[in-house]
Image (tube, rainbow, N blue to C red; front, side, top):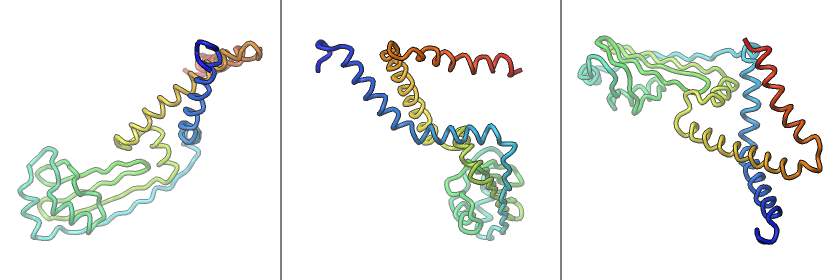
Length: 206
C-alpha cells in the first residue's frame, strides 16, 4: 500500500517498524540501566567488601639504567622493558601505559569500572609496589551506568543507546497520538507521567 493511497496506514507501518526495531535495540540496555539505577539509588545499603591485592618486587639492576634515563618530572610512557617486567612480575597492566615521573619515583594509575589499581617504582632503589582493588560486580555495573573509567567504546555505546531510546520514545508518542481517539486514558496517563516526577522534584528535592 502506497503513501498516496492511504497516508495514515503508511505512517502506522513506518512507526510500528521503527518502534519495534528501537525497542529490540534498547531492551538489554534498558534492563541494565534500570537495575543499576536501583543499585545506585541504594548504594549505601548495598555493602561490598573491597578485595585488595598487593604485590612487591625489586627492579633488576639491568633495568635501572632505563629508569634513570627517564624524565625528571612530568608525564611519560614507562619504558617497554620495565613495563613488560612489571606485567610479568607483578601482574600490572603497564605495557603501553604512561605515568607521572618525579625525581624519586614513577607512579602509574589504572582506573577501571568497579575498581582501580596503581604501580609505584622507586627510582633510587628500584623497589616496585603494585596494588589492585576490586569492589565487586555491583560496583562494576554501577560504573558502567555512569560511564566511569569505561573507555571510548562504552561511551560510544551509551551515545548510540541514547539515540535508540529517543527513537523508541518518539515513535511510541506518535503511536499514542494516532490511537488516542479510541483510548481515552492516553493523554491523562501521559500527563501523569510528566506531572508525578515534576511534583516530586518541586516538593521533595531541596
